[in-house]
Image (cartoon, rainbow, N blue to C red):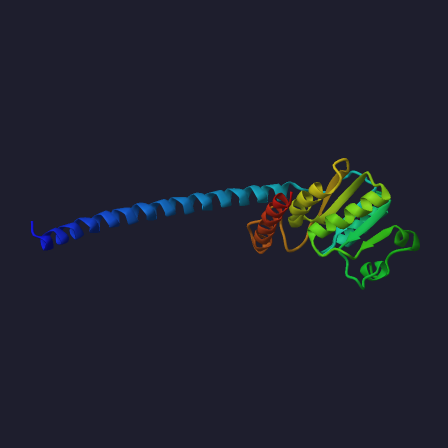
Length: 212
């Protein structure tokens, strides 16, 4: 066969071969993307169910730890303090210029004011845990009630249990807020609250795992 004809013949064969290889590669990428998508959805639905599982506690402890930054958290902490559920109320993550009276709008008495501790050094959930651990060690607390919003509790619980001393007993107590319905997390604006929390949770999980 002349050289020109051999070249033409090889090109005619190479075309279908390259196309088939391209299609196999494309199908492989589609399958991988579908698998990853399904796995992420599985993680998200599991996360939503875990968040839904948290509730209030009736237990007592040495201190109530409120993670500030959400609606009704400080007020719920004060309510538990007044119920005698703990001897100390720690507000973690308050503004540098804030005081107990400004936070509670002068609704506390001298006895309550003396039992409120303000942590002004932290500005994230991780820093909350680090600063509260210092107080736990300094004051010898054996137990705490961790209080935050329902949507935030899974991440807060995860971080605190990895930072706190292993012997510390920790109860969790959620606060319900108008922006999140934990029973119908897929409806209204609740989903838009939960998705960022899901991403933050796994960011923290990866960061803490790499830090070990």
